[in-house]
Image 1 (tube, rainbow, N blue to C red):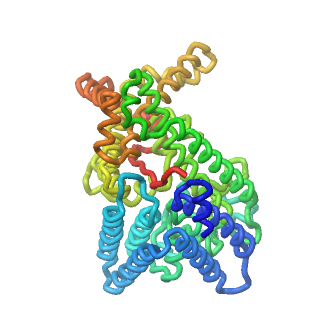
Image 2 (image 1 turned 180 degrees about the vertical axis):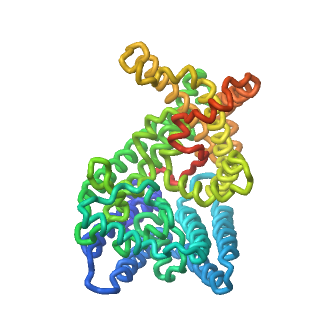
Length: 525
C-alpha cells in the first residue's frame, strides 16, 4: 500500500522503490543489531540468537522485495545445503560441489530466460544472481574442507583466530589489517557442514543479499561468534561515522545519476537526432551517457555498504596509523575508480568482491587449462553468463578482454620511454613532472574512452540496439583497439626475456594479471 502510494506520487517504478526501501530498511535492522547483539551475551546460545535475528530480518526484507518469489532463493539455499549434506554422507564432496554448481547456475539461467525483457529487470533474479555465487562458493569451500580434515593442520580456524587476537590484545598490540581482503581471507575452507539455519542466515544477510557484496561463510561465522574482533567487550570505534559517510555518498551518487540521466539517457543513442550530430559530439555524448551508467552502480553499492558497516561485519583491522578501518566489504574504491589510469586498475577498483570471488572460485580453478589467457577467457565467459542471456553482456566482456590484453601489451612496449617519468632522480625536474601529468591524463582519458565504449552494449542489451548505437560512431572503439593489437603483433619485440622477468608494471602490482570484472544488475532509481 505504501509503495503503491509512493509510486503514484513520484512516478518511480514500484520495484525500484522496493529495492531502495529494502536497502534503507537494512540500516534500521543493522542499527538494532549493533545496539542489542554486537556485544557479549551471557549465554552459550549467543551465536544462535545473532544468526536467528539475521534469518528473520533477512527473510522479511526478501519477502518485502520478492513477495511469493522468495521461494526461488529458499529452494536454492536448501537444495545446496542438502547436496552438501548427502555429498558428505557418501564421502564425495566433490560430486556435491559439481551438482551444486550445475544446479545454482542452471536455476539462475532458466530464471533469466523466463523473466527477461528488453530492459533491466528488477525482479527475483537480481538477488538470485548474488545468491548463486554465494551458494557456489559455499559448496566449494565445503569441498575444500575435506582436504583440511585429511591434513594435520588445525581445523578450527575461528578458534585459532580468536586466540591470536587475545594474544595481540594482552600484549598491547592491535590486530593489523589482513593482507588478504576480509571478504575472502585465506583458510576459508569448511571442514564440517554448518547447520542449515546458519546457512540460511549467511544467504539472507540483510546488508548484502540483494545486490552484494560477496563474502565467505567463514567471515559470517566470525561475525556471529564475535571472533571478528580482538575484544568483544570493546568494539572498535568509527563505524557510525563511516556508515553515515557511506549513506550520504551513496545518496549523492544516486542523486547525481538521476539528474544526469535526464540529460544523457542511453536511449538517445538510438535516435536519428543523435546520428545527425557532428561526429565529435556523438562521441562526447556516448562518453557521458556511459559515465553516468557507471554512477548508478557506484551509488547503490556505496549505499548498501553503509548497513554492512553499521552491523559491524565490515571491520577490516587497523591501518598503519592505528585507526580502525571499516572498508572490509567495500565493493568499489571510488577515488581509485574515478582517477584510474588503466583498465587493470579499474578491474581492481570496481565490483571488487565479485572480482575477488571470480578470481578464487573460477579463475584459479581453471589452472588445469595451463594458460592464464584461457583462464581469463573462462572467467569472463562465466561472468557474462552470470549476468544474463542478452547478447550485450557477451559483447561487453569480450571487448573488455581485448582492451585489457591490448593495454597490457602496449604498457610493456612503452615502458622504457615512460620509466624515466617515475624515476625518483627526476622528481625535482619540472619538465618531467609536467610530462608525467600529461601522460597520466592521456592514460586516464584513454581508459575511460575504452571503458565507456564497452559499457554501451551492457546497457542496451539487445543486438539491434547495439548495432544502431555503434553504427553511429562507425565502431570506432573496435577499430582502434584491434588496430593497436595488430600493430603490436607485427612490430618486433623490444625486450629480452631477462628484462621481462625483472619488470613488474604498475598495473601488474595493482591487479596481478587477473582479467575479471562484473556488475550486478541495478536499474536507474
